[in-house]
Length: 431
Image 1 (cartoon, helix red, strand yellow):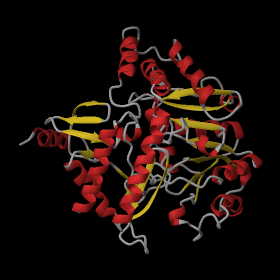
Image 2: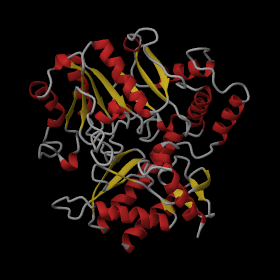
Image 3: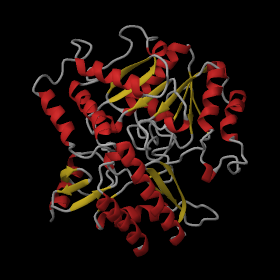
Image 4: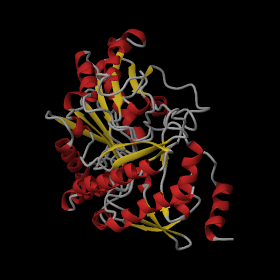
C-alpha cells in the first residue's frame, strides 16, 4: 500500500468525516506554486490553500520575517502586553484599504471571526439587530457566519437553529438572473430591489449592516456589473446601514487590485479580510471607519490569540512582497491568460456555460445543457479528479459545486501556468 493510502487510513481512523478533503493526498513540501506529496509526485497548485497563498508557498521573505519574530517572542496576548507588529500592520491597512476617511483596524484569527466581529460592531454602532446577506454567499462556518452563509449542503445541514435576524436577497448573478432579466437592459434591478426588500422582508430602520462579497468566492466567482455596488452603497447610506465588504477571498491581489472594491470605486464602511493576508498564518482583520470601530466599549472586542505577532510579521512581509514583486501587475497578466484560455475552451466544449471574473479571479461554470443551464455537478467533480491525476490541483465552487475556480499563487511561472491550463484542456477532451 502506498504512503498516501496508508495515511488516508490513519486520517479516517483518527479524524471525523466532517472536515472535508478534496484530494486524497498528503503534502510533503510546497514551494511557490508547486506541491509535492509524500510519494514524491509534484502538482501544479491551482488551489492555493483556498486562496491563501497569493505570494506563494514558503515565500522566502515571509519565512525570514517569521524566523526573526519567533526568536524574539511568539505570544504575549495583545490584551496583556502590546507589541509593535500589530500596530504597524493596522497602520498600513488603514492607509491602503478603500476610503478617504479616518480608519482603525483590529485583528482576529479567521475570516469567520472577522465577519462576526464586523457584525457585532455594526450592531453596537447602530443599535439595530438585522443583517442583510446574499444568496450564494459564503461568510464562514461559526454560528453567525454560518447563518450568513447561503449554501445549505454541506455547510448548514443539521446545524440549525441559526442566528436570528439574518435576511437574504438575490446577488447580481447575471448568468442566472433572479429576475429573469439581462444586463444592461435590466438597469441593475437586483441592486434597486433592496428598496423593495425593506417593504417585504425587514424595515430599513431595523437593519444594522449589509454584508457582501465584491466577487462571490465559494458562490462561484460571480463578478457584478460596474454599477451594482454603488447603488447598494447609496441605499445603505440613505438608511443609516453599515456597508461591509467581505474581502476574505478577493483581498490581497486576487482581482489585480489589492482589494476588489477598488474596481467598483466604492469605499465600504468596513472591510473584512483574511486568507492571503498572512500567507497561511492564521490572521484576519476588520478595517473600518474610526467612529464605527471605536463604538464598542473597552473590552468588548478581542481574543486570546487575536493578532498574533508571528502572523502580523508574516502579513507585513506579504505587503512588502506585493510592492517589491509587482504582484498586482502579475495578477492582471495571469487573469488575462486564464480568461483567454477559458473563453477558448468554451468555444470547444459545450459543457462550459459561462466564463467570468475579475483580475486573476476567473471561473467557468459547467452545465449539462446551455439552454436549460442544468448544473454539471458530477462532471465538475470528475474534471477536478482527472486534473489531479495529470498533476494539477484544483477545487470547485458554487452552490451546486459546478464551477471551476482557479486560485493559483500569483508567483506562478508562465511555464507552470501554461501547463496547468493545458491539463485542464486535456482533461476536458478526455472526459
